[in-house]
Structures are given as C-alpha cells and as structure tokens.
Image 1 (tube, rainbow over the protein chains, first blue to last red):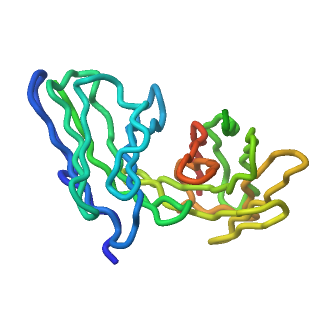
Image 2 (image 1 turned 180 degrees about the horizontal axis):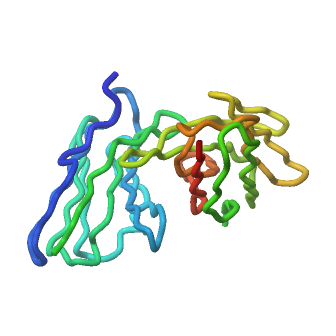
Length: 111
Length: 110
C-alpha cells in the first residue's frame, strides 16, 4: 500500500488567496483526520471524519477553514482567505481501528 | 478530559547511551497508548503501542510498558544511534479520539 498520500507537499501563497490541500487515505480505512503542526502550538487536531461524515470539527480555527470528504478515498482542507498565521505543516491521517497512519504533510507558507 | 504529558526536551545523548523519555497520562477509561516518531521533514510514524495494562510495546530496540498503577508509558532504548535523532510523541486513544503529547526532540551525537 502506498500509505496516506497528500498533495501538494509544499505550497507558497499570498495572503488572501484560497488554498486547497488534498488527502487520499489508505484504502479500507474508515476514519480520516486533519492536523496542523506549528512550533508554537505543536500538533493540533482540526477535524475528523468517520465513514465520510464529519464527527468533530471543534478544532477548526475559524470559518475560513473548511473540510470535505466526498468519498472514502478523498478529502480536502480549504482555507479561504489565507492569512500568514495559517503557515504550518498540515497532516492528514487515516485509521481503521485506533492506530492512525500519517501522510507526509503539506508545508504551507502564506506571505 | 484525557491528556498526555511527556518530558520536555530537547534531549541530547551520545551514541550508545541509554534513553528514557517519560510519559504520563490521565484518562477516564482504558485507553490504548502509543509512541510515534517524526523524522525531519516527514509525518509521524507509529513506533510502538500497548492496548492494555502491563502490555509491553517494542520495536527497533525501543520499549514501553503500559503501567496503570503509575499511569505511565515511558519510552526506553538501551543503546541509541545517531539515526534515532527525531521528535518522539506519546499519545493515547479511546476510540477515534487520539491525544498527543507536545513531543520530545532527541539528538544523538556520534
């Protein structure tokens, strides 16, 4: 299995632009998680889905962030409009039971 | 709520030294416990796990024992290598709710 796939690996954008991060979970996994990692705040859970349904989005920082999972093999995290403080590494993870498998992350830089 | 507390880093050791990274947890139920490792520029990788009290997880020379009486899951390795330099995260999970510690950066010098 290829593992969790994220794209792009790096994204540089200007403040105010829309950013879309993509994730393909491991086939057969029924839960998907989006995390954000920064030096200041560490690893933060943003949202997670179970069977494509959002279960807990309490970690989504504000209305500028939205996430979708239209099917079992694809999810997006969108930031609109982006701000410099959104600069971070965003990880997607998937699981079948209680072990989570992480993707390589997307490093987002907003200038 | 459930939480994990791990020792602050950074930790710097010489090659072949003994490693301990402390981790304690608070939980209302019976969580599963994990150690994840993050190498530079990569995502977190599961290093080892334990699902019930007194279980010992082990992998790549690392070990951790689920101690319910002390609510601990300390990570140990008898002889570290330069290639073990990474950030280590302790985590607990009850169902889909996984909580991570802040991470401990380990640097091993030759």
